[in-house]
Image (cartoon, rainbow, N blue to C red):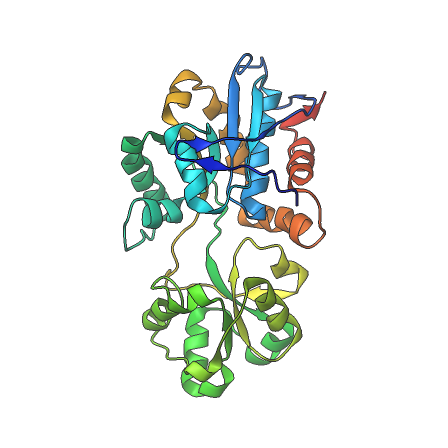
Length: 314
């Protein structure tokens, strides 16, 4: 992964790299509706969001815009501020992050569509325009190795609750420190499902280690994962269904600085087809190319856009 070195000052972003790809319209961008536009794209600093930010930039480029790449910013707030203040034109954001972190609501909305609508409507006052969301849902989940699940046959979190009551010692879990203490993490999940996992059965560690521990050792039966992570399939894990819909929806959707969208409303026609194609399964495949195979996020984004016919090589 290439760190692009974007930095921040009090007013927003200061640096970036021009996108120099020779790409032309495929199924989107015909007629080059952004010809003459100069647009900046941004993202947070994790693989999936970088790939999505690169996709936006490449689509804009194919549609005729000059594009400045300011993806890979540190944390959610940096990229958010760039969109709000106009330091960047567009990125992919997550509905749950906006609803809970940016807009300050404690309780998520169970319906993905209603949560997106609520975020879209409330964020207008912040100068942010939300385009239709994808079904890509990067939320929390618990996973188990297929090897261990051959013994326990767990399919849902309700199954985990039942096992924890029947055999408390069997339910060991590896989680990140933050997940272990957040209301929308382990404590809230235990309350929602009526389970109580002994403190001695909870092991805290970095996210990357969790996947390895669940897959290749017996130190924890279950592990906290993100539903779009490419390591789920690569490490042969089963993701358990959140059958009581406890975890918030984190559907990815393009967010646009409203003043930019007012100037270039064609952006919606460019990005809507892209969002319709982005699913949790697609995200897993793309994330695996970066996190498992070590490919560059820009290449992953470009290869996928070309393979899907959205853009073509110039």
